[in-house]
Length: 249
Image 1 (cartoon, rainbow, N blue to C red):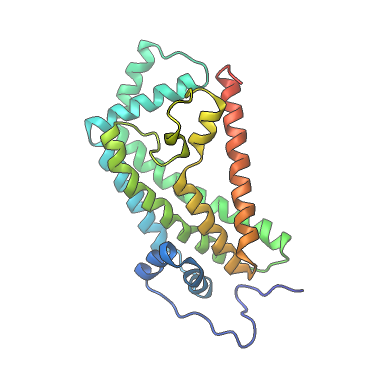
Image 2 (spheres, rainbow, N blue to C red):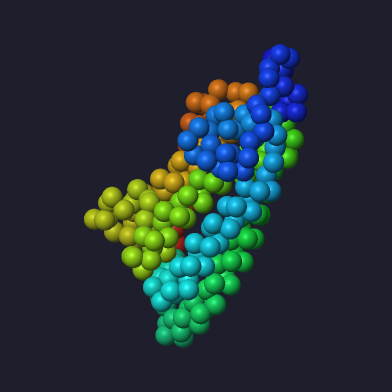
């Protein structure tokens, strides 16, 4: 069976009406399937990309402008260094403190570059996989719009996590499965695996899978399960790698 292109709806199938940026952003949260139908019919992406970048940047900058945020930044750098089996010297700690004073710049630049590059790269990867695997004919613009709109979920995560991170004085995600298992050794592979499984990222993966299923006219369930399996495999690989670098298995 030949799949229908995102640019060529099946005969007799009415295209979804265009929606405003606000309607699309809220729709991704509460009704992703009809929302992605409208997005794929009218693949606008610039507005939602700017919106999510603004939210993520504002949350990060607001946190880094506080003493708690700067200390959390230093603590995170220390944990990352120790996670691969290295000890932090006084000189390194002082360097981390100096870096925290420029934390606003790091957060702004990192969010801008990381988000744009991440969306572009993921869209390219998904375009190749789905166009080859499903014999699809969707354009890069359509896939980019789906990926960009799924980022609304990650912006919601920023809004939810930032006040919690300020209260906890930590950049560690407060929404991972690992928070429910505080008895585990932080350096263990199990703790690292559970710490990688973020509930908001799971939500994002599901929404992204729904968007791709709508774009390619495929059932959502197998695509959602496939995406979740990939996420779990990445988490397992990361946990195993970090455990080995840290000198533990």
